[in-house]
Image 1 (cartoon, rainbow, N blue to C red):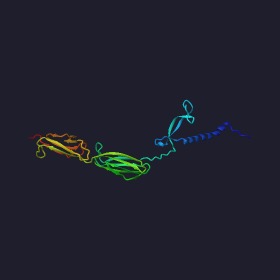
Image 2: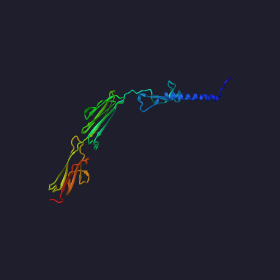
Image 3: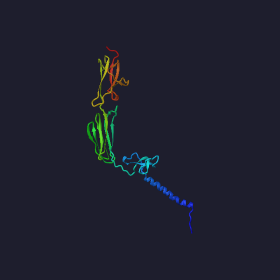
Image 4: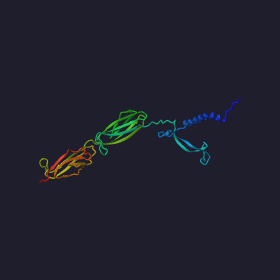
Amino acid sequence: MSLSLSHSNRIQASLPNLLAGLLLAVLLAVLAKPCALADNCPPKCQKKRCIRWVPGPSPQCPNPGSGGGCCLEYETYCDPDCKDDEEKPPTLNAALNCTAPGSNDWCAGAASLTITATEPQGKRLLISGSLDGQPFACPEGLGSASCTLPLPEGAGTVTYSALSETGKSASGSKTWQCDSTPPRLEGQLSGSNGTNGWYLSPVELSATAFDPDPGSGLASVQVNLNGGGWTEFSAPLTLSDGQHNLQLAPGGQPDQPEPERRHRQPESHT
């Protein structure tokens, strides 16, 4: 007795084997292919491979290499079996703190600097530096460290660094300006005194202002005459006959004026 298999039956029998072979080939190709170049691929793990090869000798490959051809195009990829053993330096950040921000980057309240460092490998690290020429050191930390430094009056620079036990380090600097002491300001009235707070002659207003060291200095002196609004004071200011209300303040700080002064002068005098 003989058994025969038709042509169609042979195709049907081989189809599952063909599909399985194709899937296996694709899987092997994916596993064998190195990963594409990533943004965080270390330089030591970056490799090159040929993606366009032609045999030679030929017009495109007149001088073939030892492989019998030429590579016309390369691509860079990240070797998946490569490990980056290079230790990374600490990351370092510093932020200025001010309880009452002023103008032109000055702090009109209490100022401080917060320094924070992180060690990528989780090692111990130390933050240290110089505050306007005076050395300082923060408590040592494991994996991270931070401290806050109060800043004195005046202007200066803080330099700082973070040193890991691996030997890697990072550094930076910050400048600050702090003036929490209000300027001293006084106004003077000159004229012939009468009675009951009245003057018997034309009256001139002058002002004396002083910013104690270390301060930010005085930009100007502002005057508010009879509630008409704040304007820059220019001495001497002559007052006309009648009753006047005066206020003086440092430039940029009309919210902290000198106490109100009253001036009274009769419309006619001898």
